[in-house]
Length: 175
Image (cartoon, rainbow, N blue to C red; front, side):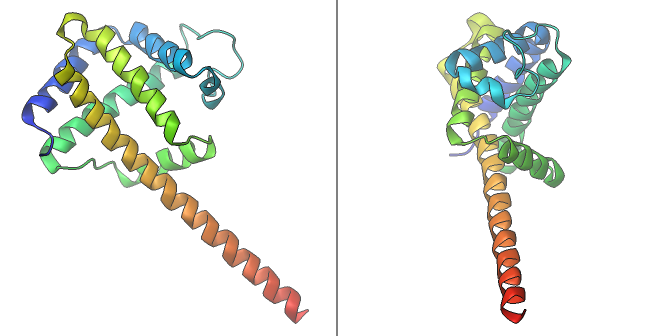
């Protein structure tokens, strides 16, 4: 069926509402993530060495804004292009960072749930199942793009390790 104009509008409209309260919503977003999965704290450099979520941490706010904004952009792309198209260098970077941090499939689900709870709080009475579906679809497509890049990087790393091992074995055989 594709991503409808109405879905895109719901994501854009709610994002515009949320922009007005980004500091509080960023804090809420990470509070939700850690409420769902306390062990996720170790995945975020700005949360690792603290017992509480730092309220005025610029990295926390910046990370939350990136997630909100990229999900919103994904909604627009889904409507316009039928797929999420993330800039190659951005996608490679996201794949690399998520791979290095040890992020796996279930982590994306935790972030999605935190995102949905945050959007619900951010839009209040305007929240609906239709809005939830729109944000879910946009986020799922973005997460799928990041996970596909992670898989590519992991496969490339395995191939590089295999080639290195083969070269080392060949050197040893000829020594």
